Image 1 (tube, rainbow, N blue to C red):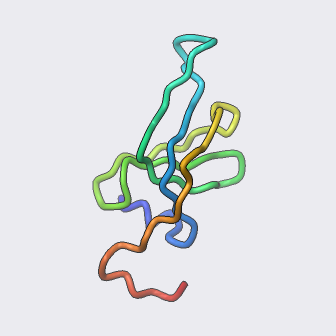
Image 2 (tube, rainbow, N blue to C red):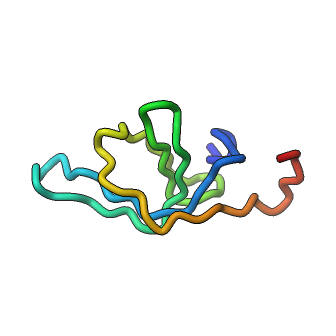
Length: 82
């Protein structure tokens, strides 16, 4: 599944810091991810914008920070209306 299938109008590159379920005081940092805020109550996180990237839905209660936020360019060949 290509993450643009989820929503190609609001994709961002970001670093995401999540609670570490194995360590109550710990966290896990995911750098260089593609994110979308939604569906409500969730953060959609992908390894990259192209086909074959792993996509996860993370409950916002598990998200500690979203940093280095920047817009993701549309994939080459995508000429749909914005």
